[in-house]
Image (cartoon, rainbow, N blue to C red):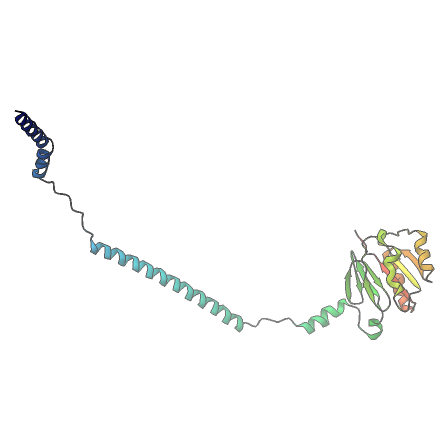
Amino acid sequence: MIATKFSKRILRTTRLARRTFVEPIRKFEKAPKEETSKPSGIDMIKLSQKLEDQRKRVLAFGDDIHAVKEYKQGFWEDQEAKHHQEKIPGFDYIDWKKNVWDNLNPPQDPFHDNRMKVHAYGVGQFMINKYHISGSVIITPSKFFKWNIDDPEEIKPHTLEVFSYIKPRPQYIVIGTGTSVYEFHPAFKAHFASMGIKVDVVDTFKAITTFNNCVDDEVNVACALVPTVI
């Protein structure tokens, strides 16, 4: 009796499993399968034509670049040939020196070259013989020195210490202080008087005139000049 009930239970379980799992699977396997769409193939003819068009464009672009390079090269070769064919007048230094430079500078002779004189001056500069000097300057009959002075107030005895080393030592110093005369402390002149040097302080124009006249008279003179400023 127990075996019969157990067998019936197994049979019901088997039928239930068949209806639940096996029959749906069989129905799915027997159902007609839908045909899947096949991917369209690549048109090799169109692709080849496209690649050929691209290659032609690349070649045409390269030809254009080559043509431009040839044009530029030919253009500059023509310009160079034209430049060599044309007679361009050169700079004649001898003619320029004879007609221009020598007329701007004082005549050169042994006496003049051995004697320093101020031939011209302007705002901030002097013309000593054939030399254009900017800024303050110290001059003797045989040489000149740049002077690191921008304003008469900067002039002190130690700024003129160079006169202690010049041989022969000048007996007379004329100082040009620009457009106007700067008044120094009495001790300034006393310092040079103790060295046996007379000092006069005047404006720059008068100092230049005095120095040039003393050089012509062969006086042992020196001058220290501050340029005029507008």
